[in-house]
Image 1 (cartoon, one colour):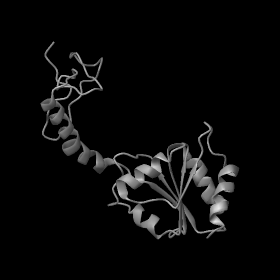
Image 2: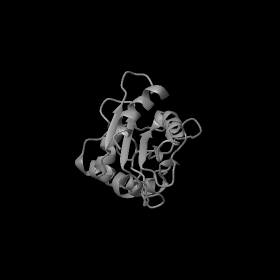
Image 3: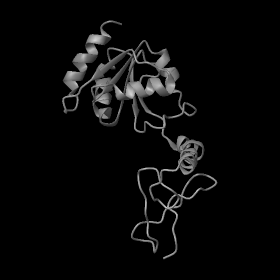
Image 4: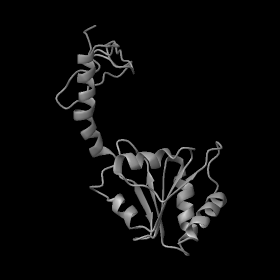
Amino acid sequence: IKEYKRHPFTENGISPLAVIGASRHLVVTDSDEHDEYGHIIEDAETRIKMVEKRIYKKMPLIKKEIAPPLYYGEDEPQIILTGFGSTYGVLKESVDILRGMKSIGMLHFSEVYPFPSTETFNYLNMLKKAKLTICVENNATSQFARLMRAETGYTFHVNINKYDGRPFSIDGLIGELDAHIRRL
């Protein structure tokens, strides 16, 4: 079997992949830092080269492919609900229920890192123009809101978190949203 480099240093940073089971090569890799062959390493020189490969070559290519958030709602909403992952359905239903009473919309992120560019859809301007922005998350620490602030500098007005292991119910979320919306 010819030696196979799972993580070679390439011009664009993307390593060709031999499909496991469909290749005559022995595929070796490790999630710890590794050399071009996929074997664990600890030397600083290789570590630096691998990190630079990821940051300066792969990351710009990945950023070009990250989908912008999906927007649903009024054209220029006063209220924007934002979430990621499993919150999609309950956010959309909340917008549908509250739409008749308030100018509302939702942003749903399906890919969160690297953070989506604002070139194709400037979701940051939309958030900045809204009177009330609410980040809805199924965790205790506002993980997405903190990532948004770290990556873009934007801070939501309100965070609503649910961390009992259950998804948001529409009645429960509408009740929490109503308490914040009444203040407008």
